[in-house]
Amino acid sequence: MPGLFDRLQSQINDKNREGGITALDLADLPPALRKIMRLMLRQLQMTYPQLCEAVEGLPEKERLSRADLDLSLENLTQQAWLTRLGEGTKAVYKVNLRAKSGSTLASGIWSALDDKLKK
Image (tube, rainbow, N blue to C red):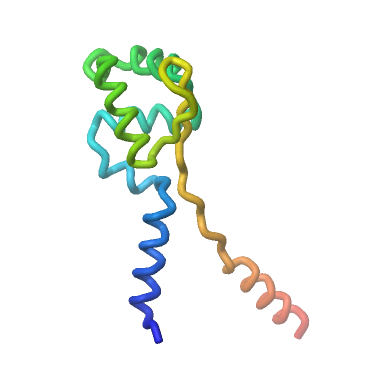
């Protein structure tokens, strides 16, 4: 019979297999990848030319070269932070957000309040 820790480890492993990101994951990224993800999170979907334009609009100290941008996009795609549709300049990148688990708290609160009001 699996214990609590076995179930928690199983849930962690399942989440790791799902891919996608959470806001807390951004802190672990290297600076170049974090810049791209911050840009992507504002739009959720951008074409390659839009990404190039957004990077060129950054302050000079924060700009990435085209080669660094390409390498960073490839890394983010391989790590499942982004999904890519298409190739080259026609590529469209989308943020791969992790699905949130639903909360059962609200229904429990309302039913408890209803029971109290009926008494």
